[in-house]
Length: 122
Image (cartoon, rainbow, N blue to C red; front, side):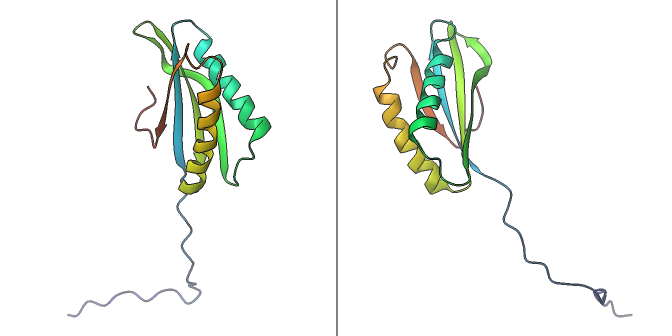
């Protein structure tokens, strides 16, 4: 007895594969000794981005919002999430954001970092 593969139905059409529904991420983290400073710092950065930067198509940001563990080791933490469909667009956006971060008036009161493709949100 010989096994044969089943034939496709007569109305079968070949469908082009769609691109995977994913995006590239960067997480800007901030931490400060006083409550509200980290979130305020990221809020200022977001407002500057909205006023002065045109986000590439397929890019957007969420937050700022408190970290899942808002207070840890005596520091208050907050996050700003940036997403983009294209890795190159994300990196260009991060370079422009970096100039805002370095020039911000509270940069010495708030410790901040940029995590590209974060593995966790703490």
